[in-house]
Amino acid sequence: MKNIVLLFFTLLVSPLAHAFRDQSVQQVQWLVVGAGPAGIATIGVLHDLGVPYELIAWVDPDFNVGRVGEFYGTVPANNNNKQFIDFVNACATFKECQGEAVEKLRHEDPASFAELNIMIPALRELSAYLRTKLISYQGWLQDLHFSGQTWCSVVNDRKIHANYVVLATGSHPRELNYKDVSVIPLDHALDKNTLSSYIDKNNTIGVIGGSHSAILILKYLYELEVKKIINFYRSPIVYTVDMGTWSLNAIAGLKGTVAKWAREVLEGPTPPKNIYRIYNDGAALEKYLPECNKIVYAVGFEPNDTPLTSEHQPVTYNDANGIIAPRLFGIGIAFPEIYVDPSNGTIDHRVGLKSFMDYAQRLIPQWVHGLGSNLEERTRLAKQKCILEQFADLFAIDLL
Ligand SMILES: Cc1cc2nc3c(=O)[nH]c(=O)nc-3n(C[C@H](O)[C@H](O)[C@H](O)COP(=O)(O)OP(=O)(O)OC[C@H]3O[C@@H](n4cnc5c(N)ncnc54)[C@H](O)[C@@H]3O)c2cc1C
Image (cartoon, rainbow, N blue to C red):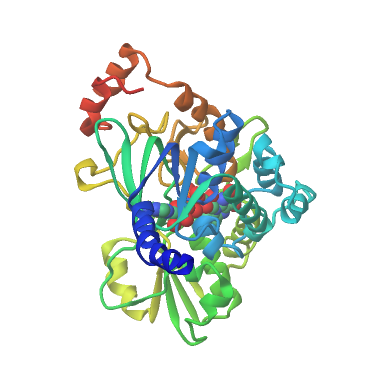
């Protein structure tokens, strides 16, 4: 009899309980979307500031250190190891993780330049450690909208309600639409082995762009002894120059291995005969593009779609404080911090692990303690032209 009752409960009650659990809402204080370097930095800083793990939910489809973890391990870093060591040493929370890879990174030569693989295992380890502590969901967060009280969203079948949301949702390579030519995806071209599987030595390959990624791909194609390489560029190559207390061309300039190759080979005394650098205007494109068997677009990155619902589109943010809307913030390559080059006043945006960490440590305390918590500040934010306009009503109510 006891067994029959047990069976009855197993068959009837358990599925109901399961259905009930699936329907239930996970209520958290902070929801962090994305587990690339920016998401990892955000979790570390939130916990350093005293937000308990139990009040943080973290969502990512892979938890594999974002795009850099998936594709860019063999890319030569454009900063020295110190920037990566500083990243893992920046948070007290990260020191809780006693992993081998984190320890290994801490003992690397800070002055050397390496491939990005030097830091990816350490970030994987931190990510795995943090997931054992907080609430994490593997999947895509969707349907993020403001209910009037909280930010509501769904991951898999689970609803998540959060008081604060941080979007660290990353970017993807931008593509243009040149007709009738086969395209090698940038993510694949940035790994020399994968690139080699797309090409034949007798090919003519076009590379569109002139920054770090484009020059790195020229280097790879040159080393792979491709017959002809046409680089369609718009801006001349610039190099970062250390000026002591500041750097000339800090963001846009070439650095590390790529800068060395560009200086010594591409722009050296005897430039490679198989590389043609052509200013990319309409006429040049018309003339030389038909020669190319394949091309690579190395023309920068654009933000991934965010999980915000259509009513909150398009998404804009304040690049001085990361605010997208009240209690909704952005960080990382998709929402980078503004940077003004002290040498010439050029405005750019800072990307890279250390800059995400610096930004997180400077801004998240303000997010936690309520930047804009007084009416005057909220009104100023609501009035900001162009950005945050669609959220002006939200700024006007008492949220923060
Ligand atoms: C050529 C190249 C060279 C580089 N060199 C350097 C360097 O020398 N030094 C350096 O510090 N950095 C370097 N980087 C990396 C650079 O720092 C990147 O900007 C950084 O990896 C971006 O991190 P992120 O966390 O902002 O975004 P990502 O790494 O793109 O992570 C975003 C994550 O969010 C997830 N996501 C998106 N939408 C959702 C959703 N709706 N729900 C759940 N999850 C979601 C994505 O799946 C992804 O996992 C380089 C990058 C490139 C391409």
